[in-house]
Length: 121
DNA sequence: GCAATGACGCTCT
DNA sequence: CAGAGCGCCATTG
Image (cartoon, rainbow, N blue to C red; front, side, top):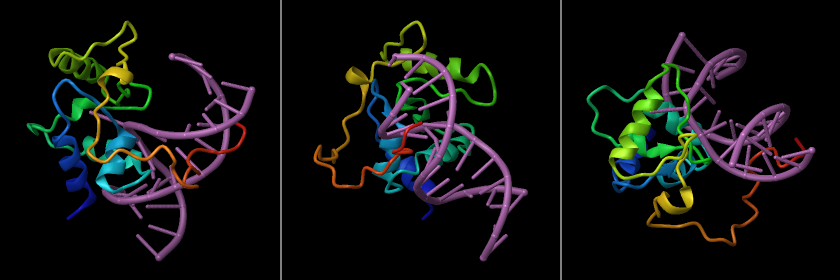
């Protein structure tokens, strides 16, 4: 069982009309902070795949630009078809469309918050 | 096994 | 919210 399988499994259960962030999917897939691998896995996704990969977006609620221009527009189109509202800049209001995972993280997260540079940029 | 890569995330400015 | 920087981590060469 590769991590891809887990990622796909998580993406597969994203409800229609909802979106999830890469980090969200990564955490649910057990990859933790390997949000990048989620995108990497989706990139390796074969054509004809029925996975709702278009429901996976970045933390800002925006569709991450990929190598092939135009594909991002396609993703936005798919989201609109599902009822997800996109603003002028093609962004999704995560406060309203973010998928609620079955096991939400406790707000009182332990010192595991070492994410990011944690240091002045 | 090591080095490079990448659909990202978080914090600070 | 947007932009800039550094970090994390699995997959690939």
